[in-house]
Image (spheres, rainbow, N blue to C red):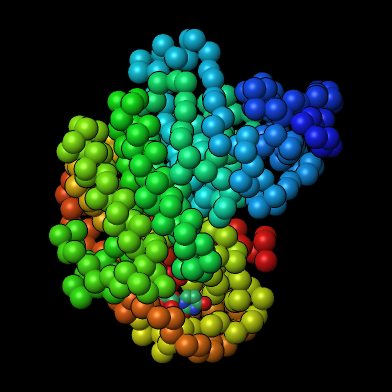
Length: 403
Ligand code: UDP
């Protein structure tokens, strides 16, 4: 399907069985992206001057692993161009949304919703924790473009933009424990770049913040006016403080530059496209249960969480962006349960023969978490609609095909 050779790469496009020589030198990347996206059923992602292309076409093709394409010099400032017609029509016809973290669990689900609501979408991701599989179905989509880039570097787009949705960040405890500096950088420098893009484009900006900004909360359930209980030097500090900084920076851009901003505090969310091995409780328990392996409950399992199905969450976030509320807002499902109850529910839902084993509780693991969603209910007329049973059924179907 693809063969690399220095600055060049050969690609066979399955639809027309053509072979195209793609020049991967930075000046020619634009052509490469255009070619890759104009081929039906193919998603081509060009990364770096050494030449690399991830191609998915009808289940065939070769995919390089994320780390192979990272930190290459050419990937930093790719320019995306669209036709003149698109440039002038942006406001009048389809709005243009930029989604950072577009290949992630939440980002890719958001991209799908935006496309279904008539947006043109430019997705950005560096695949540190995102996966090309999450956007492979969008190959050839006329209103989706993709840029492989680390958003801590300057984001240059030569088109009008109406909305910037900043979702890029490692988000599972295992990920941000492994990547503390990248987590801090994307929350700080990445948010700065995304806000800068929104400012120059006069676009509306939404920050994907988190319930983690409440830390191990002393107020329960958590209301937006609670300031939190965060250990800045603990293992979760890199994520919690990055997001707290990101919220502060967002408010500063709002006040000083007049950027129209939104901040969503996302509580535990689950659903298709979660990574099997991201260490979060839903994929951990599901993959263990589906393999009939013991479910690893941390601590005594009495800590609580409240799980929101991804489509509910994305709907709430969409409403927040389109509405007028500019201060932080919780979006999550207030149905709270202990982790032990959750483990039992997973065993029942999967029909597994797994037993439960107890492992040490990680440091600073929040003891209880439940969103107060009064604000979302009243301002957005939003509430979670999907019951845990139904959401788990969809998630189990997704995981069953992958374990
Ligand atoms: N947890 C667990 N077993 C696992 C993974 C997680 O008991 O294999 C617990 C974890 O200690 C926490 C809860 O499940 O109390 C939710 O963890 P998760 O990593 O999903 O995210 P968090 O809500 O802590 O950010």
